[in-house]
Amino acid sequence: MKKNLTVFFSVCCLQVLGQKNLVHENWHGKIDAALYLVKQYEPVLFEQTVRQAYIQLSDCAKQGMAAFATKDYRFQETIEWIMIDVDQADKKSIKNLASLIVHEALHLNRWGHGDTGKTWGTMTPQERDQEHTYIFNYQLSFLKKIGANKSDISYYVYLMTSLGLPIYK
Ligand SMILES: [Zn+2]
Image (cartoon, rainbow, N blue to C red):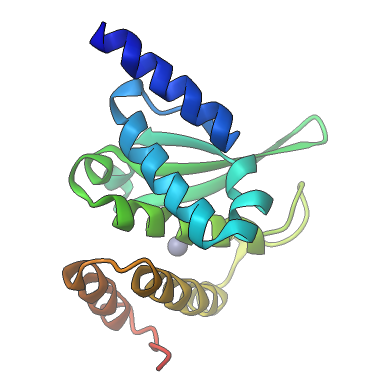
């Protein structure tokens, strides 16, 4: 019975969000809750970018990342992915996960479509820093807007400082 309810809940959320959420059902509740927060507080970003992307969990920590975004371009079609580290999905708060989704969606928004245009792999270190300055500052404002814990906010302040990225006042 409990399993049926979980499946029902997952299907409901999927329909409401229209989201290509490919994460295993064990994490659906948490990732869907994070997606709802993004939809509520960043409706334009959600409609234009997040809804189009496939959300998946992966072993991103092996590459030293909490999450990453990527675009596949095949047969004249661009497929966008937001990959979240499975440990982050387990341990981080829903608000923190929502901010990770916002971060990665902003990358997808700024990169070119198709096989032209810049993506992370073709950017210079300086261009990457510029992009991350904009994105991390956006992420910080998002965390404040949704009332995230002080520890979540101070983690990103620490991360930006250690990456040498300026923080907007
Ligand atoms: Zn990034």
